Length: 303
Image (tube, rainbow, N blue to C red; front, side):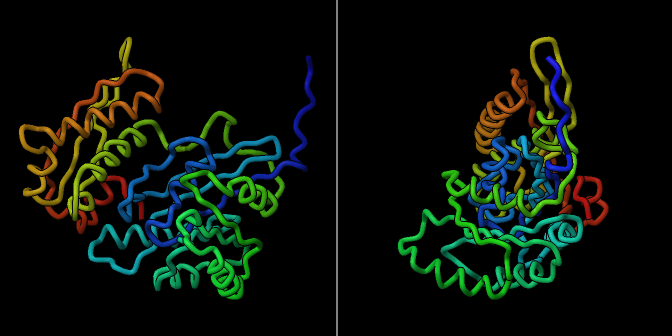
């Protein structure tokens, strides 16, 4: 049966950036909107370290959602400075900017993000997230009035991303803000990142969940081996730490921490990639990599 070709004068396509300070729920919101685990999520700030693209496809068009590292004031290392530059640069490359804020907590870092966003000349949306954590919803009205005057957004949306509340209204408003155009990405594609990248992030996610204090911020993960075998995928991942004393903490007594990280990351990979995975983990010290510009380049942190 022959179908008419889609009329791209009626479909919409565009890029929308999710911006905000660390830990306001940008990555949780991205995953909820796309319906896939594009970005890793933990309770620790600065979990997102890369610009990530999540693709939402519907009959009315396609939204390319760009998740960014949280804009933050404290920049003790070269890595932190790069994360801020990555987030700030996205503003000039998108059609719509979405400011995501924690409805229960407005800080000076939010002020800095809002100051950047209000200079954006295209449509702006304001998302007040985590409304499920509010004891008194009446404070939303005060915050909404204040931020509407500051940002002049096209719309203010209220979401609880972890519960997937408020997503339909947000997606509807986003489509209204996008230009008309033909979708760019295949309908079955939910990110432009390769599977190797997603595998590395799943290992880092488990490291951040299992380790405490400053250790997770001084490590990164590289995929050294990624081979399709007859019945499974074989992946070799290298965990790079910035200080030698952290190596033993990552491995744990009798290797228990590394085993736990490997087991949980392997299960997440198998679910995401749709096949059994054999995962080998190794740990190596690369002293001071978080302040080494060359190391940051080599480890895949775009500037």
